[in-house]
Amino acid sequence: MGEQERMVEAILFASAEPVTVKELSDRLPHGCDPAEALVHLRKRYEGRGVHVVRVGDAWAIRTAGDLGFLMQRETVEQRKLSRAAIETLAIIAYHQPCTRAEIEEIRGVAVSRGTIDQLLEMEWIRFGRRRMTPGRPVTFVVTQGFLDHFGLESARDLPGLAELRAAGLLESRPLPGGAPRMGEGDLDAEEETDEGQSELFED
Image (tube, rainbow, N blue to C red):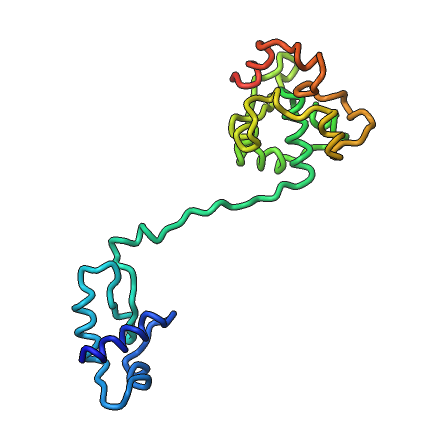
């Protein structure tokens, strides 16, 4: 019986699906009793990390119920940003705090609500302070999560125009709406006050 237990154990362990007693009988040598072997095998696995369990009219080796949490695994879902989302994110990062109208003026096209919602959902941008202008439009700023994802200490660390052009990511012609206000790598960017920087992360 000990040898029969070993054979049944091997079949159950190697099988991706539960195995019936008839299937076990067909595989085992003539004269074996898989049903009895299952009884002994089931008892031998009591209290172990895996159990021999009945699944309908078949049998399988399964993880002990109280250890199921060990089998869980968290995965990171990779989400590819659309070109519109990338452009919107870049404009907010370099021109923050900026309103939707300002983003649309720089891009030259309307910004869909879905694009803003996606960036908000990813927690790469958030609502900033409202502008003290007619209609009091809301502004957008990048979040600490955005900085952390790209390994930046602050918006000042964003690559400047010279770096972007050197990397081939920017044409030599001026950007629409003026040059980026953050991380330009020139004297204007370096002379910006701390007060202006702190405004990026205030409600």
